[in-house]
Image (cartoon, rainbow, N blue to C red; front, side, top):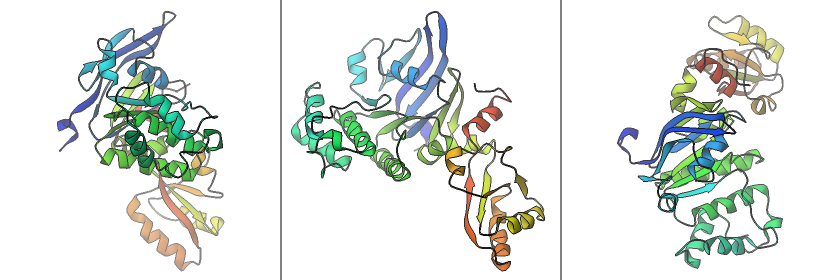
Length: 321
């Protein structure tokens, strides 16, 4: 079944928000389909959290409609929000209580949440070994999982996560990514906000890109990234010799550090890496040449441009202050 044929779980239509008479959100529209992971991508301050707060009726839009499984949030908030679970910013839990006691507390706020359902979500998020420990003993990743368990209590069709990878280490991010994919494979729709293009590219099926409170593109992640191009990053045992070899190759352009806009989080782990622009089908040939010349390859990877570079291309040079 194509995306266009799937049920629309969330429909945002012409959403606007003014605060103190100042426009904050400008005519935002997009749809999220059943079983997809939808990214909401934008720099900090672009309007992501404000939009999410409107989606779950924490603040009212100035104009526009939000429909959750066909129910309009502005007209029937209880019915509409019965279909959604949400974590806005950081999950707030009571540290002096156990994970189980926290979930019991939240379960009492919803009708029909049984102890069996609590145990079910505990197992879904992989917390059954630590659920009876006090939350103050949990790592950030465990708190994130407990927050997701709380959001899943009502068996929602849509799960909204606002910057879910913030503060997580690489292992925690990988585990969260795998967990999110597992939920989507089970038929749930997920709406993930982030300011990291690299994470959205790994995690999401489609994306809406927001800048200055306005959606500037909606589409398949890889299609949007392909409009800018992808870098090939080489980490070599002998970077000076490797650079000379690459400079001599036709169809390979070396990009200096001040020219490229790869996410700093990626480049910080790649000391002396050489960034190039080239066709991916050249990689095997160049690997062979490095091996033949006795230059060991620590890593070679295709890396997406940063969010800033994608914005610059989509907005034809407009900055994203």
